[in-house]
Image (cartoon, rainbow, N blue to C red; front, side):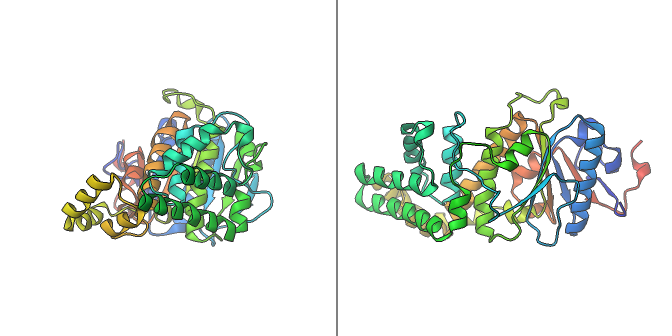
Length: 354
């Protein structure tokens, strides 16, 4: 490679050229910071090549968000949104899923009120594996019917029903999304390749940002369903796979919590009294209180990603490569759980590390 990257000075072994990373370091979560997307991409592919030479076979999933990047020939298969061979089932009947993980994922991507997670878990529990509706729309309609039958306070119930109706309308108006999320009785092709230690390229660069943010959490949900759980990764030679995401600021944009709190505190007594009287703020009231239409979407996605990437990936020995132009623009947990950070630095030489 023409561009030299080195371990950042705030990380262990700072100043070490990336080429000299040990086997123990190279399979840890890696954060790559550079303003040049092409440089980040080249480094990710080079690191992946080094790992393939040094380690036993492992799976690879590259999630591409950049329309200018092409899938390398070394990858076993490329899948794109809207292609007939690409599906990301919302549920499988191949075994038990985590009800909690399922509800957190779909509550986040549909921008639901947190209270709807409880109703989602009830519907999930009431369905056996073969009773789940084929379409995600069918599952949402079960939620709608349950809430109509067992309503909350009138105002709150109306808000929740509107929330579910918006999700149904979204799926009905995007046939590709509805087809992609359809339940499955067999492994999707891309998951089967992942399980067989192959390199898989999923190209979402042609999607709208909203669709990208809805698809990727469910992609992770499918990975977790079909990746063995090894427990704490004390033996790193059991590496299961690598997930690579460049352009991380598109997916893990920093949530402005301080701004939300400042807006809430302007009328804190009003909102606290309302919560005391009604127990819950409606979705519309939360938007008004925090001044952000997508606050539930952003906050619940951040929680879901933190649980998946920081905990679930770790306990399955899945390594994450994340690329960004500026780490200050992405969510803090990405930095917190990246054991190695690589930066371009012309002032650090190879002789810095002995």
